[in-house]
Image (cartoon, rainbow, N blue to C red; front, top):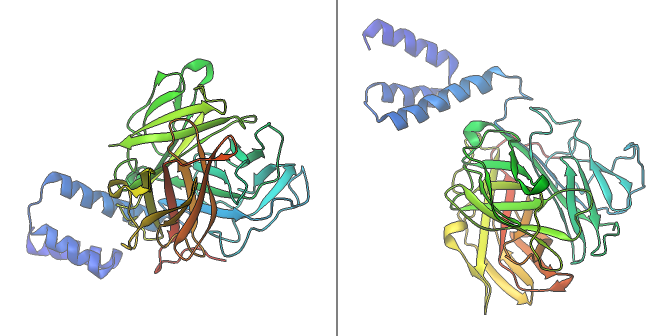
Length: 383
């Protein structure tokens, strides 16, 4: 690059980018780098330009809303006018986190305040919380869920709700999808960013989902079935590697069934460039005689030590990371091939308590935990 041209370009960059970024770009100008590295650099520069040109409310490659529905019995209001604000220490943003109860065990999330993208193109999780091992919650839509007891009767239940969207370039951090199985033929609905593969039905109730992106090592993959009457169904991830997730859906009586489900994968190994959120991931696959953390699929975002303790049959205490604190959020999925269910009993001080059961009876199970927390130095919306 000749003198005048180089000076002109540098003047433009200095007026458009932070000084440290300009310095890095100037250093690259004097080097010849492999195309994959240059492609990554160019992509990040373009992403920066695009995000900086958007209004502040839209300039987020990843948008996340989560909260703890700590009140299971607010006034029943089918119109959704009686909104409830969740516990202020366990939600992402007070303006975005509120819900109502349309009927017994039937909850609705107010999504009207979401700032960017298609509100329905999201990764969503809605799971029971607390010491009650009999409640089962299922998604109906991205903002509706119902909780029932094993007989199928609606049941008031505290819950943990997670909603997120991500741009395509953030697939190595967060990726998600929805699988429909009407007529026994699975269809992968590409909600949010595009993924590199599809879904294959291996056998009744068993699916191979090429989710891509974050569904790799040092990640947690969460799965949840969805419909109006799915209290007797549970869908679990039982393996994932190199972007492919294996899922099995089981009836509570023990036989496999074809069923629809949603997946959310978050990686702790690849920090989010925007530094607005951090993910923790922990997986334990062996639980006899004592649980053993799988280091290949576990990592705390702050580098802290993780561990798992079995306190009683089907009851575990997990040292997860910074997400298991105030303002953070956790989700858990059983990895049991035979349909056991695991849910969060409580979390705080970096620890998560987890209970696993089958047909309401405590049972040991492998599981995977996903945590999300605001980045300590970022302007993450807090109450």
